[in-house]
Image (cartoon, rainbow, N blue to C red; front, side, top):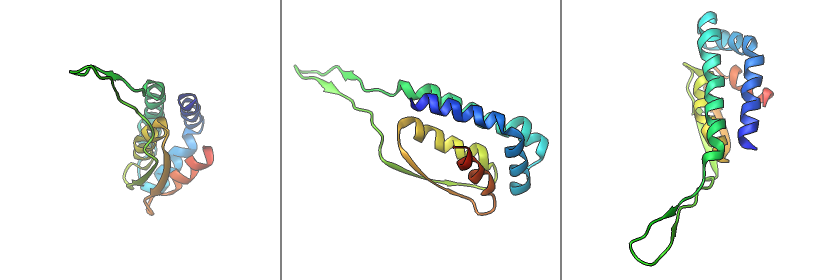
Amino acid sequence: ERGRLLMKFADLIDQNADELATLEALDAGRLLTLTKCIDIPCTADCLRYYAGAADKIHGETLKMPQAMLGHTWREPVGVAGLIVPWNFPSFLLFACLAPALAAGCTVVVKPAEQASLNALYNAHLA
């Protein structure tokens, strides 16, 4: 379910790439063509990568030296606090956000005050 939602979010980013690129160019001072051709597609690809990993998080049974049984249990750790820098706001937001959401964690995001429009628009898309 988490992977499906992250894939849907990546599709939304692709559909709104022009708006996201314009916001990032205005807010962070990045070149519009670079943002549109590199940053926004890489952001969607990052989400798709972790969406594919969402169903691969599982525990294992370990081989023990004695007559015992050992298990690993993978579960969300709780709330993840993310502080996003200003220089690549959209990609760095999702480089931190996507693995936490794929693992099932709750996320609190603090975008840079110099470049926060992109994070606000992505929250609107979500």
